[in-house]
Length: 187
Image (cartoon, rainbow, N blue to C red; front, side):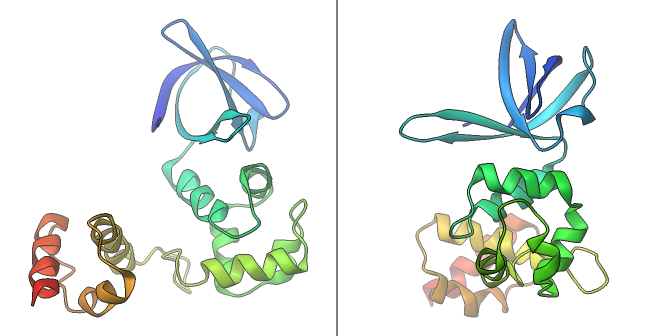
């Protein structure tokens, strides 16, 4: 799995760019290929999708854009090819705000997003984006999500983790939080 590619943009297509790194050109699908300039070096954050009949790379200029993309494709019925145009048309803040405020009309303006899928996006993502009413990311929620992901990776179930998350001190480093959470889980 790739995390990012540092390379020079050698070609711009209508839905993708070619990033050259060590004499290898990677075809990377992006939301807005014309935001990149030819012959300039970029750090492109990558998501690799491997399916039965394809192996595609999706690229993003920022880590925040990639994280929102990953959350969008976790929605039932919303794949990579539908999530990418959402990022092309809307801003990260606008998309997150629409989800948190349950603004179905805003979500329906994106290509191939109908009433049913807009409702599914809200159902699956509302409250999980770390977005507060004033538009700022809630650091405590981000820290809790990181701790939750670590504990899930260690094999704990969500129902075991939830009561522990509220008892762990958010001012600690992630390593200290994991230790404290494990102590609470083992009691």
